[in-house]
Length: 233
Image 1 (cartoon, rainbow, N blue to C red):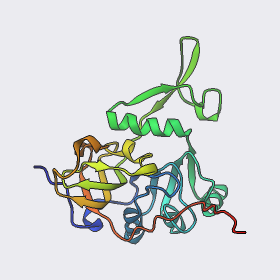
Image 2 (cartoon, helix red, strand yellow):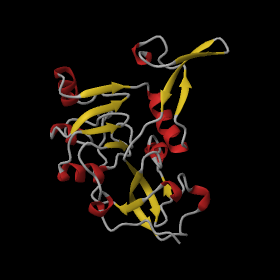
Image 3 (cartoon, rainbow, N blue to C red):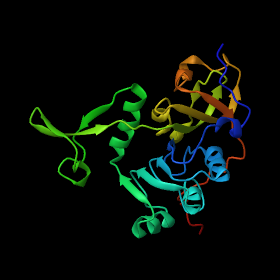
Image 4 (cartoon, rainbow, N blue to C red):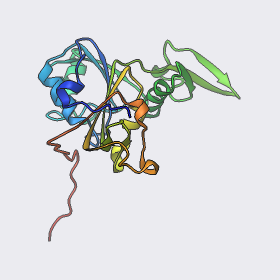
């Protein structure tokens, strides 16, 4: 049986260097690889290109890397919850590539499947399509988008086994599955890591073939991005 378990986050992130491109799963603050992000901050790697649906908030998630000026370029679809992101973008400190959310997801999935590019109607006739090949299919115009190329994917799952099989819980099943296997190395952190064979095969969302390293995370804060509560009379 193939064992992909590593002892801790330090071992999982071996090989991370300045100037690399990272994919990071999550949607808002849901399902983000908290342990991997914290350790990237500790390592102090810089000049990073980060691919993620959003950039966290000022003091959590990818916002921690932004505050340390470790990210040089951000590829995202939504960035509205991070004041530091806005400041760096408007001042020209941070290069930003805004991508339609569906296109972002498909660029991940294409990389996972080994497809170099695909056509999508999203963005045609807008700034998104500038400098890109366009083509007509059945009377409708499409934009050619290339798959992402990344050095590491960092994902977070609820449960996994030592062979790398993953189960996601609830909304954490967002960009995480599409980013598995979409980079040269995929690192999965899980809340619970069990021996191979203990997971129900019918419940597995991502098979271990897409994962190179897996470890059990710790101290998950699972912060709520926008807390809405009912007024008490």
